[in-house]
View 1 (cartoon, rainbow, N blue to C red):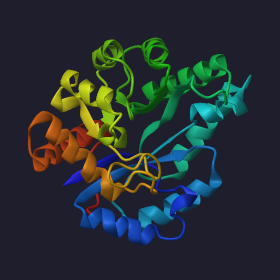
View 2: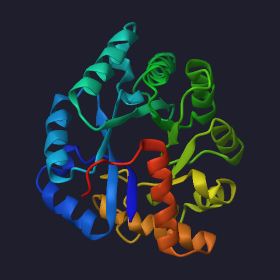
View 3: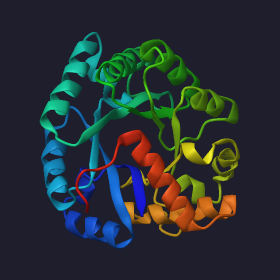
View 4: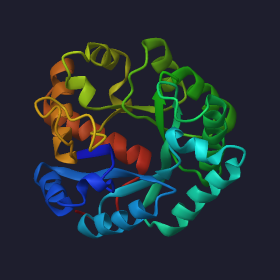
Length: 265
């Protein structure tokens, strides 16, 4: 069985055929998935309820993404309040995220992003919840914030990791997992495939980031959890093991981080 460790099934991209998307995921052998929610979106909260009814084994995370951090400038406490409201409202939440830093886009000032990230990491430490990290051209700074705000008491995953080898070593030293997605299958994704050499098997997670980053041979289409199988296949090719071996190991890693779903699909 497979576990998609990062998808956005509450996105409006799935409004028209969510039931079919879930059915294809289950037919492909997925036992569960982590659906990432925007803590400030009432629309996603409504869609999440529909998803939970369709797929009871799905798990959820909630957080304020760095792209939305600018809305909380000078009022970081409001970001924490938004996450806390979402934690109370959504059964099945097992993580805080996706949170982090993104220096590639200029959607929020870096200092505001860092303050918002630190506040959410501190909340995760307080609630004993793992974090789901978004880091783009900011991996080293994210590690620094987690070290300071988490005080060694926070676990989590750097999703869709594309940083360098030196920083992935620091990520692993934190006790974090590393998520690999569709980029691993791209012709230009050799740097990500090279990272597999440095990440122990018990720290690897697979993901789709649906509806984004569809793997080869579906690149350019709307991504969906069923296609996480393509990511597992590519990992198996790189490491010289069978897809079933990758599936079993990454699902075990998913459960180690996020816990075991109490309801079977």
